[in-house]
Image 1: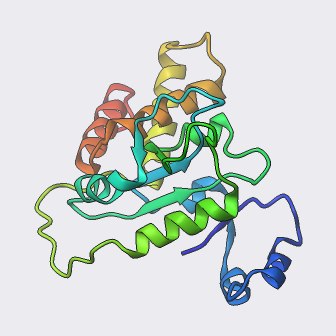
Image 2 (image 1 turned 180 degrees about the horizontal axis):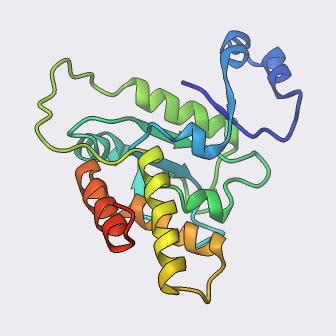
Length: 205
């Protein structure tokens, strides 16, 4: 399910002219904000090389991706792979919305791949995953992006009312809390409990 996240080039769909079999895929791809694109996803994997930044999220390599995803989504849910632009990759704000960083193992003297190669390698690997027709789903699934966004806004109101973290800007508080939610593997039931607690403490529930 390809989604274009706020493309900078208004003629981005014309890229299909040089991409075999891509014209229909690009024609159907919706344009969304990043929040909209991951609203129904419980896991978001950002793609980045390790040579030019430090990230706080756990790292997952391609060989370990299938068992990692099965463990994370054992109770169901959707996953998204987030790619940055060819020239700049993902910025810090976009990375902070990711549950983990996905890495394609490469030689030390070639720490990164170009965008087209990375997408092709990851798409091929995903296509090789074994499909399971029946999955036991007795556990509570992880929270989705839209629930994480709602809980983040509630936490921001709580911080504003209590004066907590006022040394940070609103944008910094939002990213700090949201990135924590993505790393903590919080379930939907956990999020509902925390949401109810915050509302009760603030007299909203």
